[in-house]
Length: 114
Length: 111
Image (cartoon, rainbow over all chains, first blue to last red; front, top):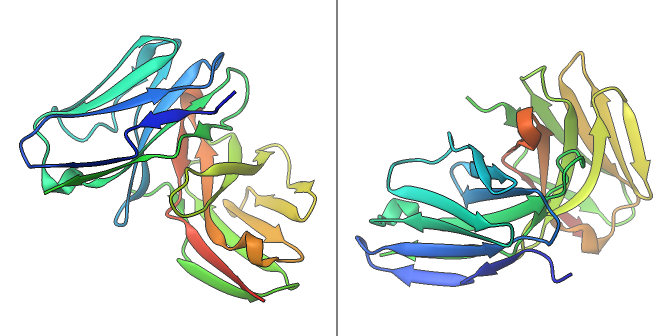
């Protein structure tokens, strides 16, 4: 398996634009997580899904952020409209059911909002 | 309120010596603790874990110790190698397989 695949690797966009980050989890993994890494706050959990169902989105910073998982092999994180303070590295991770927390991370998407 | 804290942002160690990375937590409901390693421009990779019912887990050069009464865990790397230079995150599992991460410690192993 190729691991968790995220796209794009880098995204530069202007303030106010819509940004969509994509993630393909490892096949067979029941959990999918979206994390954001910043210098100030480290790695923060934004939202996670279990069997494609959003379970906890309490980490989503604002209504400008939304995430979907239409099927077991694809998830998106959307920011609309984007703001400069959204600049960060966004990681997607997946884990199989029953394995206590050993999530496998993608390489991340570095988002810069100018 | 940070539930998982790594108070040392960086650590420098000579090759061959022991590296000790520390982590403190506040939530007594965490039932699993993990360490991740992160190289620049890559995602974190799982390193080692420990259940809350144990106090030690060893895997090669890596050992994790858990002190539940002190709500403290540590990662020991011995002997340290230059390739171990990376950022290390501790994480704790709460409800629903959710992981809460510490802020990370940058380890530099000097040849």
